Image 1 (cartoon, helix red, strand yellow):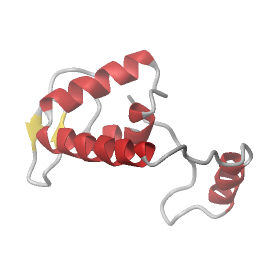
Image 2 (cartoon, helix red, strand yellow):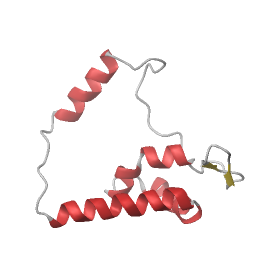
Image 3 (cartoon, one colour):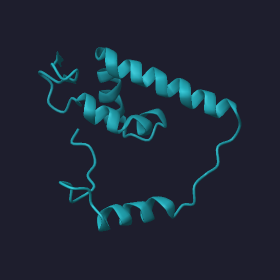
Length: 104
């Protein structure tokens, strides 16, 4: 991995290796064990080699652990995610026309 002047590490040799941006975009999916096994393994590899992302992972994991210790978390209405996606598609941010998953 290479550290760039932007502070982001990028993959050097392994195709399919996630960048900092890609791995952090799916951080909560990773923490909730919602990534497919191959993506979870690549994310884990990234965290092993990238100190800034590993630090963010530790922070977010500690935050979620603290929330969970406070008691059960409420579950959102099952229709919430589809409604949000529909709103995002209807009103895309400037320069973005679709919702896409990670390239890795």
